[in-house]
Picture 1 (tube, rainbow, N blue to C red):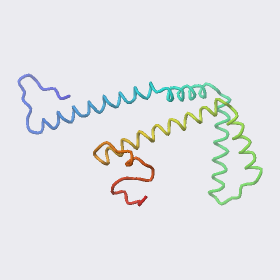
Picture 2 (picture 1 turned 90 degrees about the vertical axis):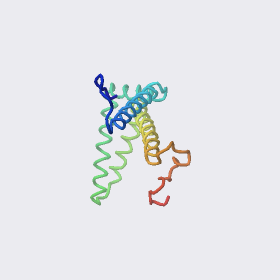
Picture 3 (picture 1 turned 180 degrees about the vertical axis):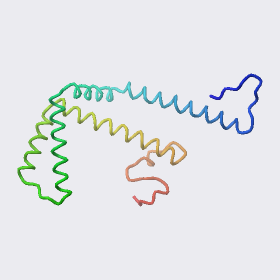
Picture 4 (picture 1 turned 60 degrees about the vertical axis):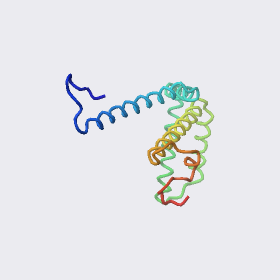
Length: 154
């Protein structure tokens, strides 16, 4: 909030400055409240615990990193129009199945997906609010509806 020295009066444009400062304080306060609500949300707390368990499990991390590296190698081959061999595909699938059989790794993947979904929902709500200049209605947030002026013709 703008602070004025004793005896100082707001000059031209000062009202806008003070309103902006107050609005930013309110937005910051509400953002912090949202962050606290996220911390308090049981599903997000569980996701955080799953991520922490994964970060404490070297075996699960190693499995995950190896699978991601293998997947990137196979994607690179496909981008270069190289044919994947049945052995490469089977090896990747075997490693993927082993990763998913590891409860810590599987819970980590589920937690990542859950956090991503929450982030996307918040992002969508905030973007629509800024775009529309009002709280979006349910139909404004429906998939395929990019909003007024999008031009994608969903």
